[in-house]
Length: 385
Image: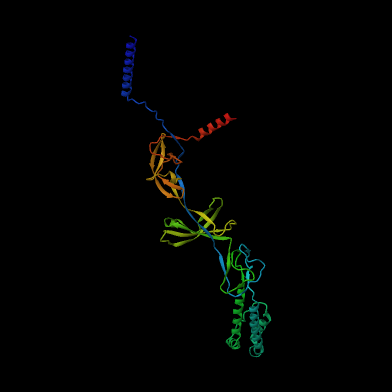
């Protein structure tokens, strides 16, 4: 009897298990997952159209406007001067840059001057007898003649007879030979034509200098110019005398320049016009410095300026309308390296001021409230105290 009851209970348990399995297998309803809505916080600006200055950005290297390459026109030994001929040495206008030993040549010049003096002296008796009216001026010439100074000019001829007489005594030929020698003698000493600095020194004191040898380079440190290439589209906006703002690479130092020359020819390869900017009286300027120039051209009315990263394809920008992003068609007017000038954006339009990764029209967004954020930060600070 007991075995029969246990068998019946076992059968009922098996049947119940099979029935439960069938019910579970037939139930295909899956629990619904909860989808959380992601709302991106965006930074916005309210549009106020106005006059936007169009600035053309260009860059280039500074070059000294007045540069002197020093070459030797005579031969000789480089004499030691009051200042060492070294790179970076400063000289004032008129100071000696290079002095070459001219002792031997100087003796030749003095010999020629002596010959001229003797010739003039030899004609004085004849002038006293035959041309007494011109004797005084030639006597004064001899009195003023100084062997240690530059040979004075010959007296002015007052008649043809006097000219024929002076020419026949070979005085003119001797005089111009002396002046030629004196001119060459002056080339043994090179003086600074302006105040500046020596940027290159290729010889040292005691060096034997040869004719035609390059000795160095001397520049004026008070006046520089920079060559920049400007697109031909803005050629009619550039004017000689226009002011230009310049900055260095680190955006630390600012300078003011002036447009001094504009090339009249367009470069065929780049379709640009070469423009020259002059800078002066800046202590920190050095030749070879790389500067960026911002040339003021014109102002665009009823326009705004935004970052180029905010301009989407097909000339669209994102605006916020009722916490939803929307695309607005705009008209780009001018592109710079980082900015773009736009027209066609109505006033009081709310546009995003920082780009959003993966943004699209219809995206749900939340506008960042700076005042609310500051208030919350203040509460947290007080709580921390």
